[in-house]
Amino acid sequence: MNPISSISKSRGDAKILFCLRICGLKHPCSGDVGRQKKNITGGEMYGAQSTDEEPERTAFRLAEKRYKLYKSLPPKTRKKPVLNQTDLFDVVDFHAILESVDPIDGIFRLDCPGFDRPVFCFRDRPGFYFIPRALTIEEQCYWIRQSLVSFPQPPNRTSLTAIYGPISDLFAAVRNKKILVEAENSVLSLGDDKIHSGNYIFSESNANTSVEAQGSFKSVSASTLLRKLRWGTLGLQFNWSKASDQSRLRITGDQGGNLNERQGNFHTANCWSRNYDFTLPHNKIPEKLCQLAKEMAIPAMPSGEEFQPEAAIVNYFGPSDMLGGHLDDMEADWSKPIVSISLGCKAIFLLGGTSREDVPVSMFLRSGDIVLMAGKARECFHGVPRIFTDDKHAEVSVLLSQFSGEDDCCITDYIKNSRININIRQVN
Ligand SMILES: O=C(O)CCC(=O)C(=O)O
Ligand SMILES: [Fe+2]
Image (cartoon, rainbow, N blue to C red; front, top):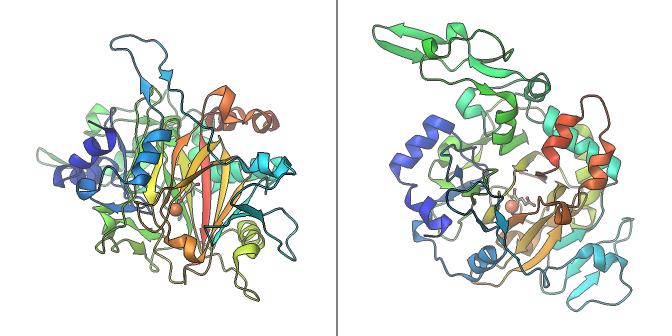
């Protein structure tokens, strides 16, 4: 059975209950994140409805299947999984185009007064803009650090919030090799029953924490938690609880090479329940990110208007993770772009049409690239079927060499086989 259908079949009530209890997360665009093998749900990205009705053979699905990572583990051996030979010859490479002097069929360089970077567009995909090498290496390092250290801080919500409540200083806890345990005052005994108030704290990993005595919660290391982090939100926050079965499905891969995937599904009308919750406590988008998004949005903005960043989703992709085809439909004005920043390992991005039946164009996204989707492009299905974590394709060696501080090994350990995407939105 293919991985998507096996996940979607299990997304009935029992699965949803399981998600709410074990992971409690809904992802902010259209699906939830599941781990097939380990049965731990890292969280979800956006919302997607049950994929039971999803057509399996759409052009978008076929493209996803073509590019996604298939690894075959020989049964009962510990051999390294074998990478399949994905055919990458027709994946558009904007870095090569940037270097080339020859015109490329179907692609043109946008002349954008007041914007000093090269911007490329597809002739037949209005509203989609690709800014290769938009960020310097130093800027990439800065945003990777922010994404790991600052962005997951409360009141920002993450895929871990619904399970453990707000978690502060996750990255510092990773550095200090701490573990998350249930706080002593967190469990109330009522006769034979135990009630967990869900108050978790970081503790020294050698602390004498009587996990058994405290009930069912098992301590979890901060580094495992960081690996489970799937998304975080900045600025206006989402209410995923309303999106229980309306999520973009993301399937994630474990490190042993088991395929996971998340997939959006917006082709029917009943998938509009997830939304921004203006009442949730939140901080404004950090000023520096706001400035960057405003500047980068220029090529896609209606003339004379300035982009107003109000919310952002930070997607964390581990090895074998993917983001299934989806639309981002929670914002009021689709003439405004989504500004989408890629960091870390190289990925393949699929840009489809307004129907899943439209054949998507595939392109590489590398660390420092920025994509804008506005107007017509906002009605187009898109997703990330593949990230590359092998030495040959990941293209992160220069990036890794920049992290040389005393505490930076935790960052390099993370980013050498991960991708981070920050996408910034104007909500109103
Ligand atoms: O990871 C990416 O490049 C795309 C992310 C995206 O489409 C989203 O979060 O809505
Ligand atoms: Fe998206």
